[in-house]
Length: 620
Image 1 (tube, one colour):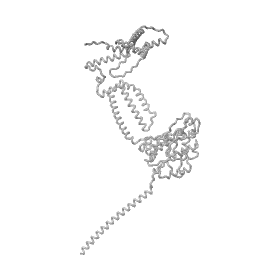
Image 2 (image 1 turned 90 degrees about the vertical axis):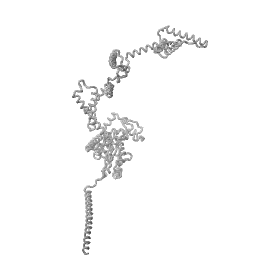
Image 3 (image 1 turned 180 degrees about the horizontal axis):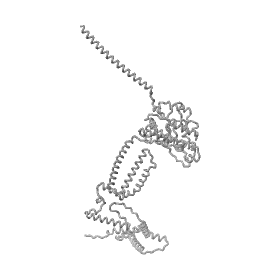
Image 4 (image 1 turned 180 degrees about the vertical axis):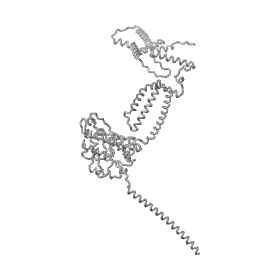
């Protein structure tokens, strides 16, 4: 009994030990998990203290575009309006009271506050016709300024005609000077204030700012301040004449707002939204008068300064983009498959041409192509075409690589080859029929001696010997025809090919035909009667025509008197009826036609109807 109790006690101790050991392992695993969790939390806290999280600047991006009037700003802003929904940003128009370009100090504070604190509208693009505002003066962050300027005189003339004729963007809107058709040259001649060179002072003060000296025409301090702000406070300033490149640089540097802008600008019809309806170019005298003015000189100096700065930024931006292996924004993705296909076709064609050239060179070396008597016309033509394509491909390669082609020898070579090809065109036109015929024979496999290749000829129906004899006879006849042509000048058409003949009368034939026509006209009876009546020359008496005419009229008169007296018609024989009809026809021809061509027609008619009067023997 005691031994049994000892066994149960030992078993209970063993089970308890196992249970406690399992609980210990579970608690140990939980503690290890807690330690690992605490270590990870500690590591994250240390990382947050060492490198704090950077704010997302793209979502707080604010771009400010203080537009200069008549510089293509409407077209540029139209792109932003079209892409803002897709790009998830806002485009806001700053409408200044009274269309003033200068804001009061109170309005400046309100504008700066709205731009910086309106977080729900970020990222945003603000645009409006106002001068530069220095945000650092108000103790806030600076937005990214961008702008576009234009050649001073072109912008000034465009604004002058815009006030009179409006634009195609809002054609229904009546402008301030509507109805005034005075040209810019006439306005300059009359020295009106609206075309005064001082009114051209606008682009410099837009970059200078809100200081009083900025708006004094021709102020040198204003020009210096405008240049300083352009370099230090503007992110990018482009020119209207290179608006496409300006958009390309913006798309590369600010993709958060201008992604896809270049493709939209080049692919849509909104590249020039606001276009002045009517605009006349100024005269040379007007241009020279403005160029001598100090305001134009300073405005133009600022334009050239901005243009050089833009070219420098564009070169560096696009150069860095190409070095990083990025795709140039001007190349659309949809054109890549077609470009690759064309390149593959060009590669195959180049290999085919190379094989042909190698075969030709081998034939020349083997003596199979003899050039002792020069080259044939077709060889020269194909060599010229091949050289033209090679030089043209090289020019395209240089342009695609961005290298200049001005003054390159390949341009002169292209001009020379083009001139040679133009001079070869008449010869090519003359040989076209023979070349087409030879090509047709080569394609169909027929020989040039095959009679079926010629026009229908009865001699081809003869035997082979007769055919050979006919060939010799036809060749003799063709030689005789050539000799007759050289002797008499009569055109002999060729027997092998159909050729259209256009008759060209010589001067001798024309003079002879005119002389014959005059002679026939003067020999008509109507012309003789007119000459007898109106000319003072002696009257020529001819009894032959008058006696015949008198006999016909006397006989006809007697017949009419008899028929009127006895109320009956006398029968006419065939000869009498024919005689009366011919007389009437002759008189009618003489009345309606001065020439004697009618007699020839009557002779031809009588000759044709000669066989009809033959009496036929009747059999009863």
